[in-house]
Image (cartoon, rainbow over all chains, first blue to last red):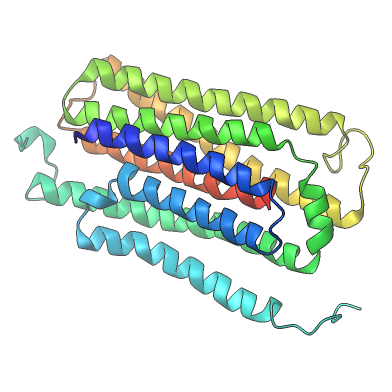
Amino acid sequence: MSERTLFVFVYLVLLGLLATTIGVSYLELGPWNPVLNLSIAAAKAFLIVWFFMHLNQSAGLVRLAAFAGLVWLALLFTLGLADWLTRPDGWMS
Amino acid sequence: MSTPSALHGPFSEPGQQQEAARLGLWLFIANELMLFGGLFMALTVYRIIHTETTRAASEHLHLWIGGANTAVLLTSSLTMVLAVLAARAGDVRTTVRMLLATAAIGAVFLALKGWEYRLEYDEGLMPGVGPVFPLGASQELFFNFYFVSTGLHAVHLALGIGAVLFFAARLHRGRMDLPHRSTMIEGLGMYWHFVDVVWVFLYPVLYLI
């Protein structure tokens, strides 16, 4: 497969994922709605980063630098949510 | 591929130079990730505190305009990556065409976004300006988040369009030598795709959940 074909294919998959995420948002799945929608967003982000941002052709050091950004983001969310998700019910009132 | 004109000090070979450019771009993108990450964190906390009112506020957004805009941005990412392919092949004409297409599609996104803002203004959903805000205080806070995060994203996209046009103009005037300088188009593309990725998350977080 030529690179051009690959990019067009990735683009079509991305559009398919977009259609899926809109479809999912119309279903009443309770707590699974955010889980599914965010998983689809993560899958789309991976495809863009891996193929369009050339991480698949990049050296290990470059991949590590890209991953480091994610690590800091994970720290922000883990430490932040460790507080907000563990508060007892009705703490505000 | 490895002509002397492509190489700048302190690098000893083109591959090393390209790797350094990508590394620098990723550092910049990690920096941007923290900027948008803080906003996403704030919105997450807000959803934890006001789960129901936030969901109710989110239903006032125009889901289909946002969805169409996602498709628009994904399309612009395709044309951008095709510009990079053309640049690597040394095809200046196709590179310029693809860059112009990318900028035009980016402008379509901004136009749709502007139309959406206009609709929200008319509905009174823009806090602080226009008609009185029709919903409760916590919903107003959600709309503050919505305008700040999409506004910041739109500024990034507008800067991206400017940069794409700048490079297209330089190529058109023969001021940039391809494929020797294709790494610059690649860096431009990485920024563009990052702005796309931010929207890929903003869309479900604001509109769909």
